[in-house]
Length: 218
Picture 1 (cartoon, rainbow, N blue to C red):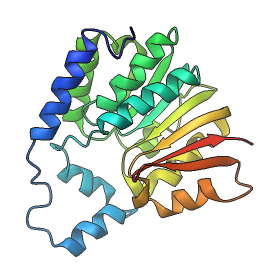
Picture 2 (picture 1 turned 45 degrees about the vertical axis):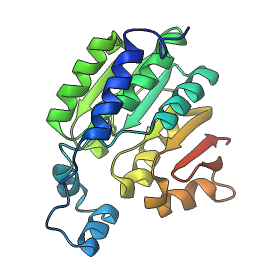
Picture 3 (picture 1 turned 30 degrees about the vertical axis):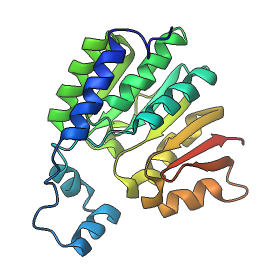
Picture 4 (picture 1 turned 180 degrees about the vertical axis):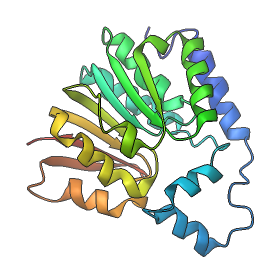
C-alpha cells in the first residue's frame, strides 16, 4: 500500500475530485470568446484572470495526479516546487510521494488567499501538511527566494504564459535529471519551444494531449 491509496488520503482525493467535477464554472460569464483567449495568453493580465478563477477548482486530472505521484516516487524526489496550488489536489499527490520517499519539502505557490486556506485544510486532513510550504502571492515573487538549493521536481500548473518565467527562476537549482511537468502546456508555446529546443538542456515529451514532461539533461 502507498500513502496515495491508503486512508485518509484515498477517500479525501475521491471526494475532492467529485467536488471539482460537480462545480459550476461561471468565471467567464459576460466575456467574449476573444477576450477569454486574450486573458488566457496574457503575460500582463494574469492576476485579473486568476481573480476571476478564484472559486474554480482547476485540478489536474485523476490520471495526471497519479502520473505526478509515479514520477516523484520513481525519481526519488525529496524537494519539489509547484506553481499553482489551487485547492491542493496536485499538492496532495506530490506530498504523498514525498512521504513515501521518506520525507522532503514541497514549496507551492498560490495567488488566491481562499484557495491557500482550503489547500492547507486538505493537507492537514490528509496528515501531509508537515511536508508542504504554501506561499501566498504572485509566484514571480514567492518563488524568487528561500528555495531548496537542489530541486528534484517541478510542477507548472498556474498561469500558462508564465511557465517560461517560472522555469527560469528555478533553472539554476534544478538537479541533474530533475523532472518538470507542465499541465495544459499547449497554452504555453514559448515554454514548449524552450524545453523542446536542442541544446537547451532538456529532454521533453508530450504525455497525452495536455501534459509535457521534461527532464534536465545538461
